[in-house]
Amino acid sequence: ASGFHSLAKGVGRHFEAGKVRQTVVELEDAFLFVTAAGDGSCLAVLADADSDVGQVAYEMTLMVKRVGAHLATAPRTGLPSGG
Image (tube, rainbow, N blue to C red):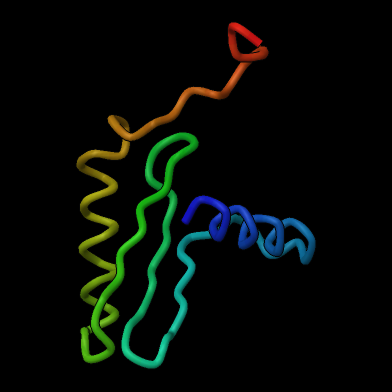
């Protein structure tokens, strides 16, 4: 999910279209939602094809507001020890 979100961010930068709010993929039997969730993290949800996509997106936004700060990932620094 993080790679997919990163790809969407690159598209936004390349086309000067602003920040990514959410990325949605419509599959034959499901929807994949990916959104930023805290600094350096993202939230991915796989929902059935008959789901209310607006409701799923809304609930994801609420969840990120509640727990996003706890999902932050510190940037990687330096080389791993031992090698």
